Image 1 (cartoon, one colour):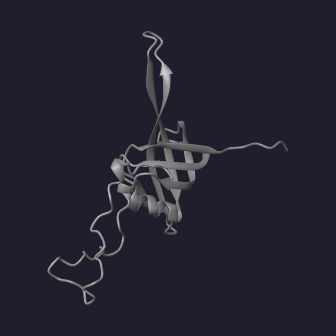
Image 2 (cartoon, helix red, strand yellow):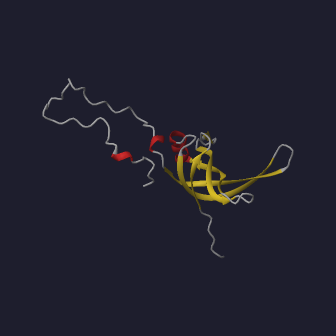
Image 3 (cartoon, helix red, strand yellow):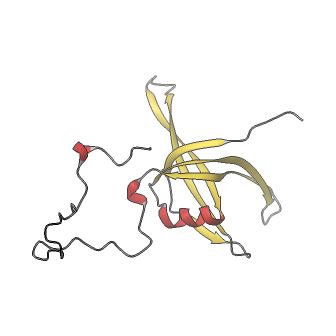
Length: 155
């Protein structure tokens, strides 16, 4: 048998909040749409424009639960998986097809998407409330700005 490859990589923005459902066995299945864009030359004007493509993504089990908790409409994500086309018959017995990406690996690219799942971190003591060791230096209340670097660095 000849070797073949069915592998997809997408980096894009989520087009809708995830739809989390559960199988009768209790396993999570989450679906969402992902928008990707690519440059294309407009045939009439000759200008370069961005063309948006939409992809249906499906996540299973633990990954599906993570997506349901941390991903929202507008989130920037990178996924890896494989393409699958399913067929079924609708109520009028017409054959229907759907192509979807079964996601095997997910990277969240927006730090702002991550919501803490546990209790919030206690705040630093107020200036008039010094810890027992008054010589100890208090940690900064927020990280430095790093001269305007953005949180969207994907590494």
